[in-house]
Structures are given as C-alpha cells and as structure tokens.
Image 1 (cartoon, rainbow, N blue to C red):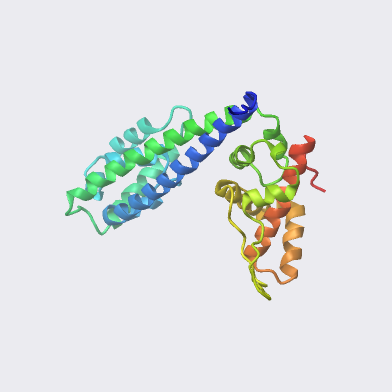
Image 2: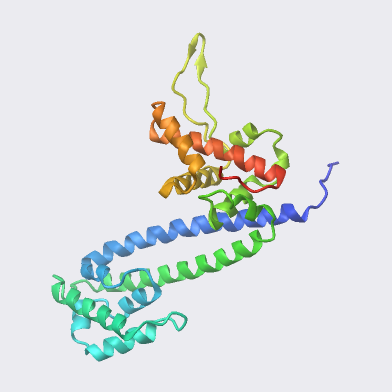
Amino acid sequence: REEFEPFKKRGVQLLNLRYLTRQYESLSKMCVQTKLQFQAVLDQVFPGYKGVFGAMYSGVSLRFLSEFPTSYSVLQTDEDVLRAKMKELLSSKRGRSEDWINQRVQRLIDAAKQNPFQQTMYASHLINLKVLITLILQYQEHLAELEQNIDALAEEIEEYELIQSIPGIGHKIAATILSEIGEVDRFDHPKKLVAFAGIDPSVFASGKFTATRNRITKRGSRQLRYALVMAVQCGLIRSRNMRIKAFYERKRAEGKPHKVALIACANKLVHWLYAILKNKKEFRPT
C-alpha cells in the first residue's frame, strides 16, 4: 500500500518546464561542439570567410557558405549572381538594403582573393563542411522551437515574472531556476534551498583537525547551480544589479577570491529568490 499524493497541475507544469530547459541546455552544448568542429574545417578551407558577415552563424551566412564553400567557386561566379543569391537567401522578415548586400559581396571577393587555399586538395573537407552547416542550422531551428515552448509554458506560472524582477535574471535563467526549484514549499528554510543548489560549504574534520579551506558540496541540482552563477555574473555586468555588485565588492575587499565571492553572491541570491517565491512579491532593487 502506498500513500499517493494528490494530483497537482502546477507540479506537472514545473516538471515539463524542467525537461524542456534541460533539453535546451543539452542541445546547446551539442551545437557548441558542432560549431567548434565547423571552425576547424573552415580554417582549412576558407579562413577569411569569418569576416564577411557580422554574424557568421546566421542563416544567410551558413547557407551562402554551403553554396560557395571555396575561394575558387566565389571568384568564378559573377558579382551579379552573388548579389542575387545573397538576396534570395535573406529572410523575408528581415530585409537588407542594396548597400548592405554590395558591401558583403565585396568583402567576400576580397576574402577569396586573399585566401591561401584557392582550391582544397581534400574533397572530404567540403563534404564535412556542408554536413556541419546542415547540423548547425538544424540545431538552431530546434533551439528556437524549444525556446518558444519554454516561454509559453513558463508564462503560465506566476513566479516566472516575479523572479525576473531581479536584475540579471532573464527569460532562460528564470525558467531554469523556477523549474529546478520546483515547489518552494518543499523547503522550510532558505538554507535548505542553498544546500539543494549545492553551493553550501562542505565541512571536513578528522579528530582534532578541522579544515579551514572548504569547497562547496556541489550536491543537488547542477542546472540550478549553473543558473545561479550565471544570474550573478549577468547582474555584475555593467552593474545591472547594484545590490549584488555592492555585496560582491564587499567580499572582494575582505580578501575573498573572485570565485569565492561569486558563490557568496549566489548564496545571497538564493535567499532573495526564496523570499520572492514565498511572499509572491517582486524584488526591490534598493
């Protein structure tokens, strides 16, 4: 015999949100690894291509490179054809001016002329390059779809907007924090939530010996721990979160190393999150 818990729609929402955020993180890591492989191959085929487009991993950039992967193919094609092809690949939602297209075509031709590898000896490089481009585009498509589903699911939860009132916490970090914490009622004290995140200091003692330098336990949710540190770093950038900035500088003034001060800030952030989730009130910057 088992004592079943009553069905809670909110609990199911949080579990679905947790699965989606973890899937997003997993796909993001796979996409990063694929981009690193892509850069390694591109350096051997067309290294100057990196400066042609502002965003090398944009859809138009990757699709254009798939059509013209070598300097020889670029130089053997008429400029008008290059312009027409680039205009065709541009998204209809985000049109570009003729000057923008002409500028990119000129950059492409200059890069092709300066490329030491006019033609690659290894056809395998070109095959690999096209495969990696296809994979990156697919990853980007899946990640965009996941992000839309995460936002749609998270917006149904009241606390999603509340925790974003903390400077440095955006949509992705908020969804991750909310899904990993789950029901805050499980924790009757903020220190228990700190322990769940694995940012509480470990204690090592043997006999009369007690260690003076202790690392964090790193138990509990790894995704929550990473999201908290990212939220602290985003809050420190350009002093977005003045309260966390002042706390960080105070810890640094006490002689704490950078990473130790970051963990202390993450600990402070957990206490703020706990209060917000418990009281259902927005964060007060001052």
